[in-house]
Length: 277
Image (cartoon, rainbow, N blue to C red; front, side, top):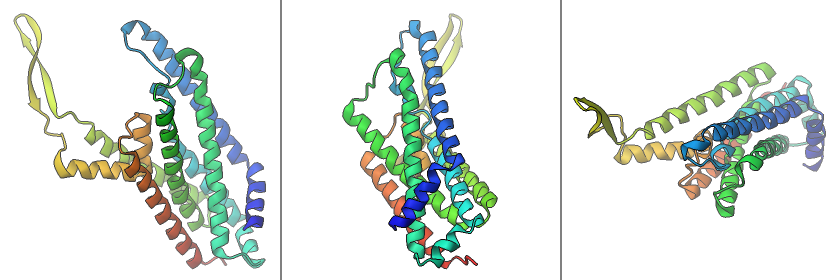
């Protein structure tokens, strides 16, 4: 395993896709934060106070996209170059090869996360520090690491399932978009207000009418089911993080661990069954 990890990390430091993803995520994070700073400056007279927290986690959903791109291309190169077969020929087990690939992809994902966090620091001079508090910030970072592990496990499975680099990349991107759209739809339904306060036009002008029930509001057991699904999906957790709405940290952490374990076991099983000739 040590030799496999050494070889994987040696290839990682030379991988152009890795460095491009790292630079792109750093630039996107810094650009998003600077845009937030401009928004805060424009609205400074409105009486609403903006803090670093309002913008710092905005790009959390993008982490999954970069994991998908990197894992599919990095692992696809192993097939196209014949590296996977060479590892097996010299005596490494399929489980060791798979886990070494998973670990290097997770390490790359953690570095992507570090670039995302570092880019957001450009907002400190204009917006000051975090208002979440040290404990809440540490909890958010822990949950980010856990849902990032879930993303990595999923896309490592997909990346090792396709011998074609192009096919793996396309499927990974489509899967990420599917997870993001699904989580967004669930989140949007949960964001529906329970009551509408309609505007009534009277002789004196516009006035607020009596609140009316919103037919799209979800309540009861169906609402709890939607909330669980959002927590279960790593894309759902990233959306909640972007909106500072991680309300069930223990459940969200357990969901990430479950998804990671399930994806790792599924990937190992599929890789053992895969024909590599």
